[in-house]
Image 1 (cartoon, helix red, strand yellow):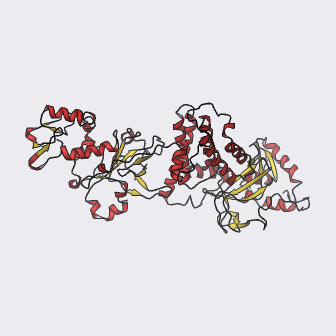
Image 2 (cartoon, helix red, strand yellow):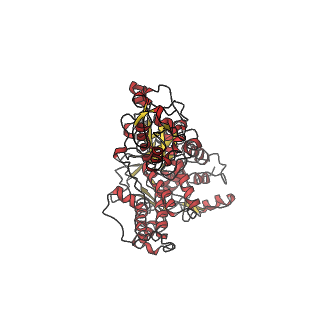
Image 3 (cartoon, helix red, strand yellow):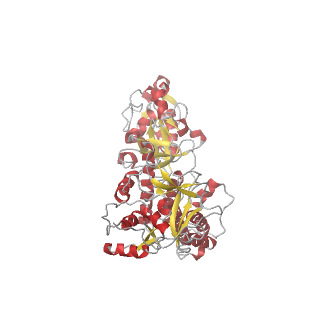
Amino acid sequence: MTNFLENAPENTTGNLSEPCSADGHMHILQDIPGKGKGLVATRDIPKGTRILSEQPLITLPATVPGEMVPDILCRQWVSVNIDQRIAYLSLHNNFANGIKKGGSQLVGIFYSNCREFGRGDKVAVFLEACRINHDCESNAEGEWNSNIKRHTVHAIRDIHAGEEITLCYAAYHDTRTTERRAFQKEYHFVCSCHTCNLPAEQREERDRKLLQLMNLSKVFHETVYLCPPIMSLQYLDAQIRIYSELNREDHDVALVYEFAADMTISQGDLARGRVFAQKAESIHKTTLGSDSPMAIKFADLARDPSSHDMYGRFMCWRTAVDDIPYELEPHDFEEWLWKREEPMAPAKALIPSKQSCFSGFDDLPYKEDVATNSSFKKRHWCFLGQVMDPIHIVPLDVQVMDVRGKKLRVHFYTEKKGLEKSATKEAQLGHTVAVLDATKHDFKFGPPGIRLQDARMIKCFPLSLTKILELDNDVRQFSKPQQNDCRNCHGCGNIAAAASMKRCSGCLSFWYCNKDCQMVGWVTKGHKACCKSLQDPDLRRLLFTEWNEVQDSVRFPLKVADGSC
């Protein structure tokens, strides 16, 4: 058996890794339960701190014939000192049975611990960085810095003393199932980090967001030259929102800001281009260091966005570089930055009355309340929300605005994740979703919203929220029976016996004294526009049903009787 410690050169004072603080290293190698060895912070490490700056110990071309690998490694091994050899040989070997590209311990350890560096054409072992274990929500990021010719590791969030320093080995977008398969194949272990051990409902929530990120990125790249630029910007905006909900700020987030800078500058928008470049620069400084090529590149671009190669290609969004509204509050600034259109809340007079079954989000109970509170068991209600988000990415989340102007999301946890045609075919910008017996849900990753599990409980109507609330008021005033089976004329407003009046033959909803009144209702009061909508049985039953009297379970299509027949 080969003795890899023989003929080692003497130790020197030089070190492949340099301390990053005056008082020495900020980490220590310790035993980690279930992981072997790992690096643990010896003191609080602020976000953006450079934890490691390390030269490679031994390297290989990324593509090299297997039979050449042992010889290449052995030629470098002769210059590795005894301490470095001991440290190298203590690294984990996924191929201890000696069947990996040449069969030696040296080769097995190398391929178990190497990582790309340079332009991706080489792989190397970095003794200290190799000790950093995986975590799906890592607190550090490692990258090769070509300016200083070293592999650096930076804290991407505050790390507390005693906390393990971790990297994410897999692509951050990988869901738990995809990640587990990859780890078993490539790394020969199953991740058991905190994220992988979340309760099933929270893991599903996180995986949904990762799938959305992956699909948003895919759609952006496939359509960036085909769709209007505002739509492409919305795809990027949606990605940033999800990253924010996941509390993640890493290289992938910087990349989204890079794309946003490219897009806005190409449209002549130097103001937004500067802000996006500044955001990309800030993240690169945190994750790569201020001396990294990417941090320097985007610092230069932020100083002069017009230096971008794509500047002036289009000038649809032309702004001067100083046209940045710094006086805005943070929320309003983000609205400006992403060119979002702020929704208008319904007029106060149109907020549903207490007699209505329609509810805003704040009026909804939690699912647990429905199970324990008898008052909720005895009645039905319906949440209404106008669709505010034109982007439909599977798994589907629809941003809506409720009857009081509150914005929230309806999250589709249905069997087809929102692809049910019956539920979403009308879910276009400006249309209104109705969710029967909706309940609030507190999400771990993101603000409270509605967690929809049954696609039969939702329907989207091709009407604005304001229009549906207007119809609700009109139906209460002009369609429902008054005392002694009288009706209000929709044209003149007079109250008369139903037997003496005529009902609209199209929607069967409004009553008129005569043809003249019907013409007033048709033209002056807008019945021409809403008659077709009221011919939808679900909408008509939603408006006409006395929901306090309904005891049976409900779903779309509605089967309950209504008062229009």
